[in-house]
Image 1: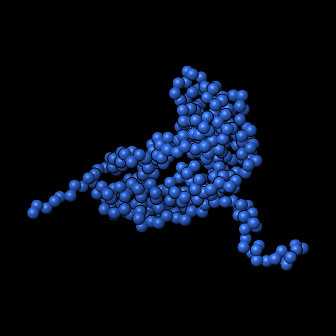
Image 2 (image 1 turned 180 degrees about the horizontal axis):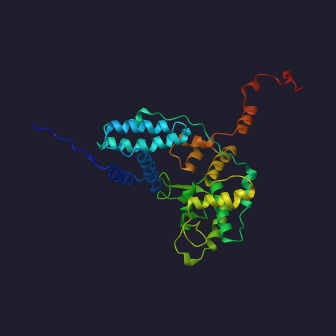
Image 3 (image 1 turned 45 degrees about the vertical axis):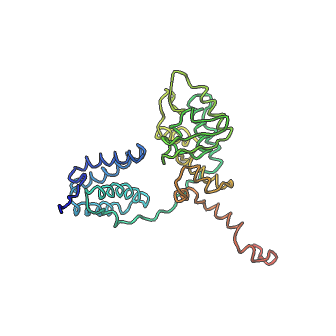
Length: 313
């Protein structure tokens, strides 16, 4: 019987060619353009530091170990992000027969302490009062703030919405799969306040703009996430005396949603998370929340009669 020769796929291709094929593979999986750019950035960041490691399994293993050893002082979150993107690329390279083993498998993730971006309601109220709603830019910022605090929508998702994505009569906004980070569409309820703001913003848009996202620049062009964050930090944060970013609004929504009695599973669906593991990053309560909950729910409260409790001196 003739011996079957295994096709080696992309073996022997340069790193640049492999990265190109990998990007096409991710596009076919429906991964967003932004995520693909993140893959490309992390992979090229590694290979710029170790340009001669590709094509030799031993050199690649040494390079990976040295790369993560050099980053030993990095925050656990940064370490895990680097590991995540490189691991996915190298797993693909193994499946395609480009490399024999994935050396990142021997490098564990680091334990991350949950980070709470706690913005109290007074600051959020001050932020909502800051934009000058008599101008287009101020009205746009105000409505975008309302939508973000009302739904916890991702900044990139919000800035990709069109007027047609809003059903103002039924108080809903639809985030299409093409816009959603997870590539899964979802429809979110909005309050009448947000709905009225969207209606006003639509009414002041010049017809000459044609088809542009709802939250466009004053010139009628799409607005980037970095531009929105810049406005929050420089136009409003500095004026009000506290730091604020576009993603801080998403964290604020999650915390206040829970404090006001919202359910964790409803929060998961609203924020567009595929499972509760990611949602838990947003629902870690502040120390004040833990203290107040403990004072209310400690089992010891029911075990010691009130009449026998010692008064404070």
